[in-house]
Length: 255
Ligand SMILES: [Zn+2]
Image: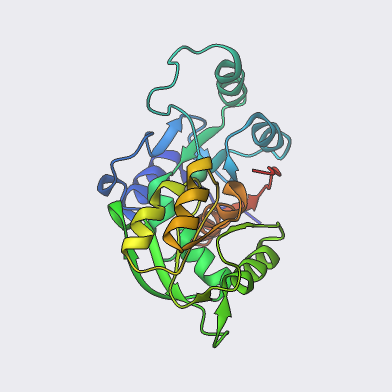
């Protein structure tokens, strides 16, 4: 059977539109970050374009890699040395393209990380909040009366990772707010939006005090764990659109 393929720049343009890339003021370029071979038949997706993911993509003979965390972050050392050199060398030597989508992939209403978390957790989405509407609001209708501890146990179970809950564990939860990744700084915005608990990936020392003093619980469920789903959904969507192969590779990360 003849395998189908998509031309690299056709895929890049398709994703600019699909993910509404121009809408976001981001900390990195979104789209094709490193140019590889023209014809793409096999795409590997992963959370972060770390060396282990690149090595696996080489082993699997991928034509392109699709990630949430790519390269060239604002403020980083611009020199091509050390870790960055090794990663770029691997991509260029093997003629593999790197496509990266950060905020557009958090935000997308169907394939985004937060939409996918709602699906995974069984939450009913009721609204959005915060800058660029990156925060999501919803309810957990499966539980008539849920406590913060119930929500924490449910999310830990779905993600296969123990989440850190800060605040009163018996506190009744009505509105749940969430934002994948390192969105702990959105706790204030979640409080203003009327959330009873805010769920994100990471946690910082000041987050603990704000959660305790505001009486809005905070749940840190893992940066990596909360961002595994958007890129998988996007990879699957691309595979279906163009009839190409897609495989998600999970490089485990405890944070
Ligand atoms: Zn992230």
